[in-house]
Image (cartoon, rainbow, N blue to C red; front, side, top):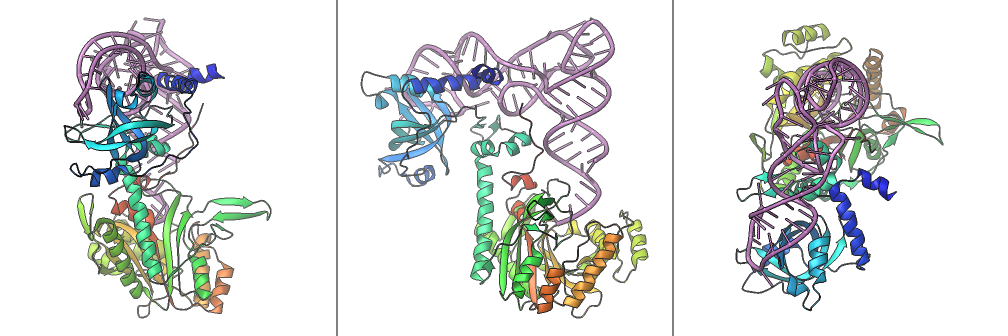
Length: 509
RNA sequence: GAUUCCGUAGCUCAGCCGGUAGAGCAUUACACUUUUAAUGUAAGGGUCCCGGGUUCGAAUCCCGGCGGGAUCACCA
């Protein structure tokens, strides 16, 4: 077994395994079980150590070794804990005061590597070059690393050397990516902060956080191809949810006046830098409200999230400075198309729309109905123009089978989408609560499906039954959390805001 | 799914027109008790993604596959 393993290992891996057994021979457990007391973090030291006060005299800290500079009878190394990197200073005669210098000469200098996790005790001082450093009085190996870690070296002018640039490496081995790239760790902290800020906002507003089924017998609430699975005991197909909308509305029927869920949704579609098969959507529904109320609520929510994250309402995204200061601009759907094309397509029938598309070089499919055509026209002609947060409102009824018809505009529904940086971030309605109308809308969807649109919605009879009991007037919204995080962290790939983006399975030989 | 680019040491990359591989960092050895891409000297390390083909000879050319990126399609 050893031979077989050794043949596939690199030189460096073999060396580290040899060091492992060497350590064991010396009676040192490379993976000790007991806790190591930590009384300070690297960040704490770097921010609060003051040379003259001589504080941080008796510290105990753990971290991973990120670099070592061996000076002979003394060494400098850098360790990294969850908060920061800090330099440590290991002096032979300090950790080996007696005759026996084995702990330094052998254990520290030969058997400890970059990547190893150690605990140290000592005190903080400043080197003559002015760097805050931990003077090590004793150290303990807490976990031996068996793989070479590609640590980035940065020159004085900030230029990075040997930075892992292979995205495949970074996404497949995110654990290593996180170790070697502090900014990646920071990105995900930001994501957590965004979610936390929004959650607090919703809880403060009195909404109830809920959980609803991921496995659904009918994949409803959106139009998308679902993942299908099978339940053995029930012997039925089940679908991974493409949305949780219909379940959250059932809860509004049940009498809660505000519910929200940060939901993983699943869609069996293509993958690219803005699409992952599983993704996170925040949906929430508030009774007694309409979409105008929701626009204001949404503005406040985002303004707060951005401020909590950056301390200001402005975010730098690529070339643009985007300002989330409420209120956001509002543009009506058909006004946006009119603005872009000079034509008011609102009353066009399907044929006229197809002619319009042809004129503007917009590709169409025979299976597309009016709704899809409108959708296509908007995304081709208008979407990219909205850089600053802009609400697009009053969509055609064909595009929105779950939305209440507009109170004064025939053929439209009370719906808005929030566009930021040319992309849709949120989608909201005055929710359709008329069960008869809802049934008709589902039947329209059924026709679309028969026509070849395999993403049209299925009829959910239980949902209709719920509506028949009566749902209060309600405003609802879905916010794409991944895309929001991309925006607020200035990343243009969804893979940068997902710890473990979907990848083709790796082959291990 | 389509098109296109890419796949050489642990990491970053070089290797043009075909002659079985190089550099820096990392690793190993020695020196060095305040360095910071530490330094100096020396050494080791590669199924050149996989499988076929052309050829006396392939990392290099051709075909197929696998994996990744980009663009497009579907979608959020």
